[in-house]
Figure: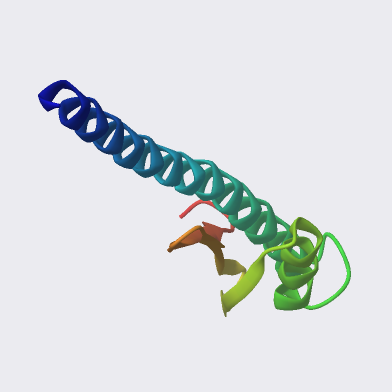
Length: 105
């Protein structure tokens, strides 16, 4: 009987640790995706702020984020420098990335 109880305990611990690793992996993958979308959106918005492409900078950033299927959290334009915040749920976590683009200082 002691062997059965030990085996069940080991299986329960293994399942719990595996579930935690899966959740952490999902959050890490989503974090990379959100970060890439924030970088791309900030670059697109900076291009619009500099006049290289038409449209308002924050509208451009919103279009890029929408195409990625993520949530556009915030956009701030300071001259020709644009800061974009993108968020997305990742399992039980919420992943958020902030990116800034513009000319070098």
